[in-house]
Amino acid sequence: MGYVAVKGGTLAIEESIRRLKYERVKKGKVLDVESVECGMRGLIDQVMSESSLYGETLAAIAIKQAEGNPEEAVFLMRAYRSTLPRKHYSRTVHTGEMRVERRISASFKDIPGGQILGATTDFIHRLIDFELMNETEEEAKIWLSAFERQVEYEADDTDLNRLPKVSDYLRAEGLIADCGNDDQEPDDVTRTSLKFPASRSEILQVLTRGQTGAVTAFAYAVIRGYGQLHPTVGELRVGDLPVCIDDPIGRSDPDDAYYIGDVKVTEVEMLIPVTVEKEHGKKELEFDIGYGVCFGQNETKAIAMGILDNSLSAKHPEYPSQNQEFVLYHIDSVEATGFVSHLKMPHYVTFQSKLDSVRKTRKSKTERQEVGSP
Image 1 (cartoon, rainbow, N blue to C red):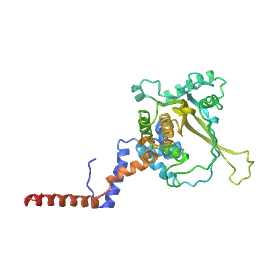
Image 2: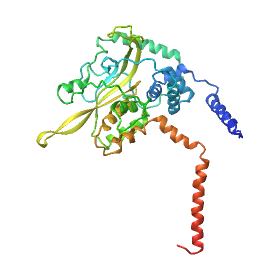
Image 3: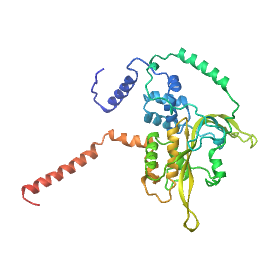
Image 4: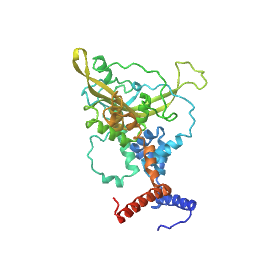
């Protein structure tokens, strides 16, 4: 199909939108939303995290509509989120109640409850599997049935709902300072503008909905020397958290709640060495905690979030990676994509103004040269 020039603003826009749909369906195949939801787990988790909206089917529809473009899918999800009424607030979720499916520590080999590798690409060969070109649903069902039988046979009695935290043992040894409960109502950056210095709740919220690549890049800068020593993953968990709400009209007992479902999250506690000055000028090495949590299995982002959480707590920033305004304003995918993309929009008046200024400057310079003026 050749490009057809169209005159007229409204008509041109309508034709552009038709052309966009053509590009999506031109090969005669329509991507099934259920297939996206079942086979693009990593992309769905990323889109849900960056849009602050947990809905796998919604994310799959957005990904289909955006033709796999994560930034556009996040934009669609956030726009939809803004139309939803907020009917309830869930009770505080305690990550100690997570039903764990993956749990590792890079700090200790033997941890209470054991290391659980779960599903991860950490140990695969990064080679394209060309056999996937001919994979069929029937083959997948046969493999799945055999796998489930094996899991049922090999299941042990480990309680995956109450695994202890690695950080609790470090606190018991006095290697990590106790962290008191903060019952202050968290700030909501989706309802009020971000102000600096930002509160901890604002920092964590912006980080968890930040663009995955940007959050990772800033964290990489931190560990390369812009603010921290080498951090270590104290504990990384992936699993399901139960979400409960109070009775909407207050009829239930305060100790009871309605269970409304689970959300899968990735939680990370980073151990970051810091030198602390004690009495008489004596210096000792202790550990700070950097915390990261986000929707889905999104491990690199959660680790990066933990690094930045600690980096942004610096009282006297020395590097851009410790500057709240510099980091938090530049990791939002919708804000960044929108501002960069707006450069494609008409700037005729402003550009012509700059062009006239350049022409006048050059004309004035030419005239001075002709008369021999300096």
